[in-house]
Image (cartoon, rainbow, N blue to C red; front, side, top):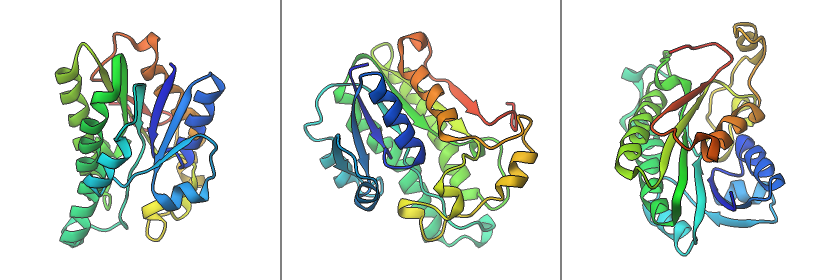
Length: 237
């Protein structure tokens, strides 16, 4: 893989993915919110993007040039609350950023993905393994999986489209959030979560990086429209 674009590349999983890809000789374009880019200095190509702003998405991809793969890691989770008590504007913001934003990113990326290339969306185990309080986020990530399957059919055979759906990953997001979610993302009791996981620990960013790179690479050349669940055995669809 010669060139890769990573949306959300300044986050915990994104940094690990970019570092691994570069170690394998891949040129990486990092796209993220301005504040996230500023907090994570990077020597490679950087482009500001905001999935809540379609015009900014278009600018971020303007003149990108050919890439072999695109990974969409960007996401936004609102404070935990029952769905019936979630303000309409909060529900709309989560759906627009996570789901509509993913669709807009996909459309903007498609002209630049070389034939034989791949798009990977990072969804969430909450897309199917729903839990109280996570309604808007779960709805958006479930929609992202439907988006992935739709694009896999519509873009075949030129471009493969798959998703990785992790459980909770031990990053700064779990301790108050990063980027857009910094002020109000929920925290997770990592000790309790690890104890309830068959593998006996929390996922770390590198656990998600491997499946993403597999889906981008030639070993997944006949894999499209699929979801790889990465959760240590917590959820087995």
